Length: 316
Image 1: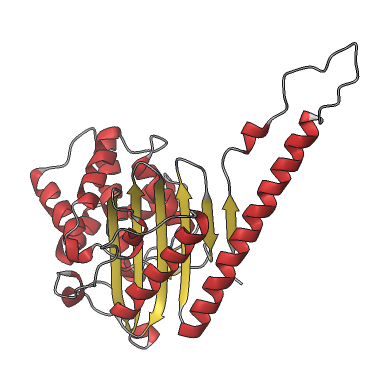
Image 2 (image 1 turned 180 degrees about the vertical axis):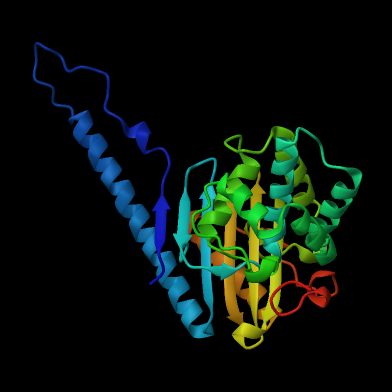
């Protein structure tokens, strides 16, 4: 059974009434405090039941496929959250390019400067088309693993481990830490300046269309998506694929942070299908009446820059 949490916002709204009972007569109305407690308990039980059902479905689905997956979702609007296997370590592949960019921006802030034109060009290619050469350059510029760890500590990362030998694509992380990263990019509770956060979001919104899949399936027809995916076959896993997706999906009805990591897939296509199926299951369970956009999900393409440039551990 995966590790899971489902929380519902708004329980505080069920606080005790400020209306006092009449002093000269016995009130026949229900005790508002007791009623509040009963409603709160019912909401918690409903949340637990719903989270358990989602997790059971994911368990069966993953068992049938013989793969591993972790997912964390948090709705900034409602406070709804869901975690499954959120403390298990997964190989980041190219999702870590967002971390590299964030580390570069934090260092620039400390140096009281803006990014150079060269750094902006490298960052653009690293995020929007998942270029590996730019990632190599910027990873070295931030100080490789030492600079990476220093920057991520500012986000409260607890379990992320830089790739051995400075191989950024082999970084190990959890969906919990990745959600911390997304929250630091999207919200004001962040070591990043407003300008830095807006810059990262802009690049994630401009990812080339063939690399927009995975967590983006959570988007409704009117929602917007800021995303970075990662996919790579790994020699250490018998050539099987790691397929990951981190995204900010937002619109009139929701404001979601989603991190999904998975491995042991026979192909990239199988991994994308698995990630999108699980995200769909979670969205269906959390949001009754939710339906994906008509063109939700994208057939993955290996014609971009990421796969041809990557070796089995995620870096040249």
